[in-house]
Length: 181
Image 1: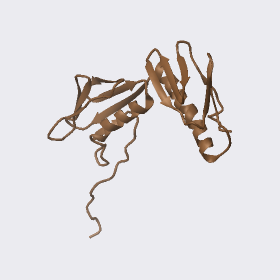
Image 2 (image 1 turned 180 degrees about the horizontal axis):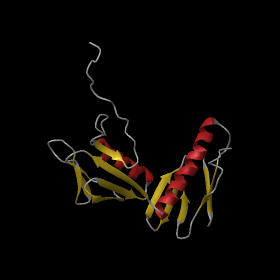
Image 3 (image 1 turned 135 degrees about the horizontal axis):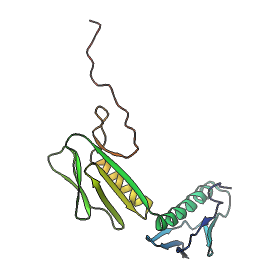
């Protein structure tokens, strides 16, 4: 039995879970989310918890069991607490500015780079070197943060670029002169 899949997802107060024709819909204070569920998985919900069961121990069903439970748990956490990713910008003259709903980056190119967030995602720029991406859907928050980071990945020599808040960039030494001639 899957260690994750067999655990029930606890539904906190103020959250509604509805299961309808292979789709799980979760509604809470931070928004509404829905997820299509594989037809092999059986999802049952009552007022306090959601349980996921699998028909047999085939490899595919074992893999889907934990995945389905984790996706439902992520939706419940998303509509109650929400998800957040922080990005830091390092480099002389590198900065971010809020422009409309999105964020505009100045990261060493001739033009500024503008990123428009998808529906349900908010972007905040508390200071010119910090970007905060937040929303209810964990997958969309992570994807949008990755797109911002891809604008200028941190380079290994000076560490300049956009990185996640606690990301560690491995540094390289750079050129060194031949000392043994």
